[in-house]
Amino acid sequence: MKNRARLSLRVPAPPTRPGDAPDFSGVKLSGAGDVERPDIDASPRDMSELAFKLIRVLDDKGQALGAWNPKLDPETLRRALRHMLLTRAYDDRMYRAQRQGKTSFYMKCTGEEAVAIAAAYAMDRDDMCFPSYRQQGLLIARGYPLVQMMNQVYSNARDPLKGRQLPIMYSSKEHGFFTISGNLGTQFPQAVGWAMASAYKGDDRIAASWVGDGTTAEGDFHHACNFASVYRAPVILNVVNNQWAISSFAGIAGGNESTFASRGIGYGLPALRVDGNDFLAVYAATQWAAERARSNLGATLIEHYTYRAEGHSTSDDPSRYRPSDDAKAWPLGDPIERLKVHLIAIGEWSEDQQQAAHAEAVEQVKVANKEAEAVGTLGHGELPSIKTMFEDVFKDMPEHLRRQRQQMGV
Image 1 (spheres, rainbow, N blue to C red):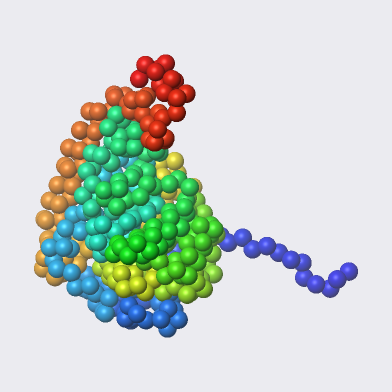
Image 2: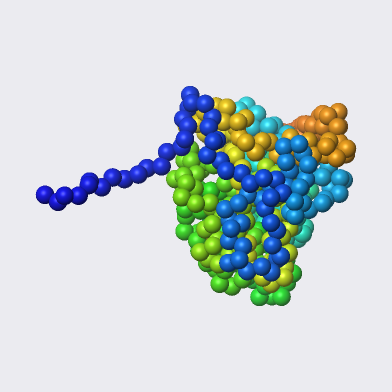
């Protein structure tokens, strides 16, 4: 017999399970303001350490520190805070609608509002976004009507996608929001291709895309990184590391071996790792990457370190795979609370204003929801016309489909 140890297979496991106390002792944080900010034309090789540090601007007292502080004016910060409050109020109302049987499915972005809204503020209005399903804040920050979002969730007669998409898979060309796909990862190479086309045409618009930590284990992620690097595509590739891919923790996708940002190093991409619950840090990192892209210096990979505060979707019960109070113990806190504390710390906000802004957001969502529900919800009210099933497929409708439509009398 061979005098060798028997082989064994390691299966990564999360540090805590249901019933355990939350344990984030393994989370290593850089101090607020401690991480250096390179010039936009810095070589990726010379800034590789940024893939392992964590860009933070806001400290525990709400003070903005360091070279990454974007020094935004108070009015911009107040507007951003209201957009985050509106996004959360919208999420809460749509979640209740699903529980009431008014829609089949919903996904919240609770705890991740800063990731999308800060990016929307840092990018130009006509830059193209290729989102995953937790970036509804992009639409809200860009002024897309709440009632239209709700019509899509309810799949009613005014659904702009005519009932053809799963609820929450929005699309708006006018608002630079590419159609969300349920096949995760496809948006990454699509964003790179769009950015390459923009550069090829001599345009001045850039693209950005978002995937979760689990999606980095899929081939589409690597294909996108390779093309973005080789062709210096003007694109921002965002990895939202919220620690969970449905019920699989980030370690299953390789998060225990290295940071997700570090995957950009092998492709020769500048890689940033940013506190995803710090609005100022996300804004600053996105602004840096956007300026680099517009200067024909290529793509940037950004890992947003955050936490999925609630379930993956309304079909998920996170209490079956993690401690129920995990989100409350997350060391980077709540993005809305942190921006509020910052505004109060600089004398530009108050608790009374916060309560009033929250009530205003809730009322705005309530009014929009009443209008959308009046049209129809799941199984009730007006539905998209049957004739729409024949539309938007062929430029010129084939004769056999024309006959079928006539037979149906639509």
